[in-house]
Length: 75
Image: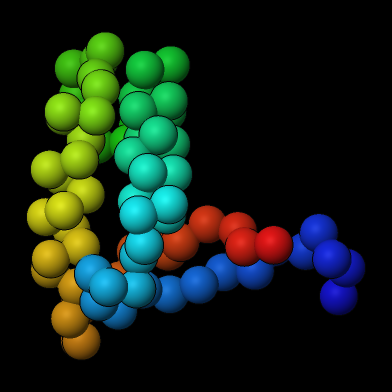
């Protein structure tokens, strides 16, 4: 496996997602939404005030057997 290979991590509790990862997810969803992508926010432009509560709701719902979100690459 190459050092630049994609590695995925699964979060099963809110504690599995640290502040750096939360910020990265929020930034990603803002960027995707504001360029017209489908990230679940129908009325761009959006900012952290729109996205952070949605992320917290998702993270609070994490508990087996709920399906956790897929976390992005780790290097």
